[in-house]
Length: 410
Image (tube, rainbow, N blue to C red; front, side):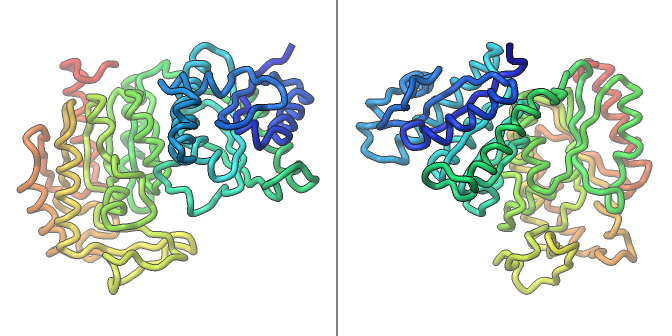
């Protein structure tokens, strides 16, 4: 009797041998296998547990509709939608414990939607000829997906691709056996930040919130961290959020690839989750250090954080744009929102006398934020820096008020 079952997904009309090899390795390690076919035109060598017809129908369509579309992109999107819906239903029914999808660009395109449909904590692996490729935009990547390059596997089995496939099979089965999934037995607070050098409010806030009976998850706001934060926020997983590092929104509007997507700072609001927000590192735009500076930032001074990441400080006009963008996102919220504006700065480097201090540009940002702050947002200004104790104390006072009136459930 196998202890864990892995759902093996792919286009069985073109990748039958490779998908069956994956299944053999999983079974050889004592795991169970369920199979799902997302092909359109052909058929597998043996019936799958979930056929291409099951997949298309799960998405409200049919294989004939996919064929009649006459377009491979449209057809695969039909299969992507169906596989995502079917996989989520099967997971909720306890039919599998981990997922592995194999594909080229077509299969990978569908795999990203399928994996994104499953909750964080479900082991999900994609074996792809385009793993780690710039073809895949950050906002398409599920927050906790694992990818393995399918080296030498474009057509048929060989010793090179078997090395990739066997590792992937072992990895997903091992993950399904070892994973400690989120329990959500305590109400969860989602917080965004950067390292303690530049922002350190979490050092005092995390233990204070834990003393109040909450679990605290701090997300590194460097693109994928924000995606994980937004993914959980969209599920309504947070009792409240302290979204104090909105820099990914600035990255996005300034054209950086280090983006959490256009929906950054919206999903907590869409799920009516109470939000306390602030301006941590709002004035910096991070971009990929080995790529060209985004056109909107051309000619501005660049600071190389390391060989992967560089930063540009926004000028006054760009900070005004950032303020308007924050207000636009927060205006969509259906739950309570409090914005904390620390008037002495939003990161450790922008204090008066600091290397990134620009009083005029900061004033431009604050004026724009005040002018465009939407009616659904309560703006609280502090004569303090974001890293001062007064900032954390104010955030706790707001939070405690919500606890007292039932806005946040303990």
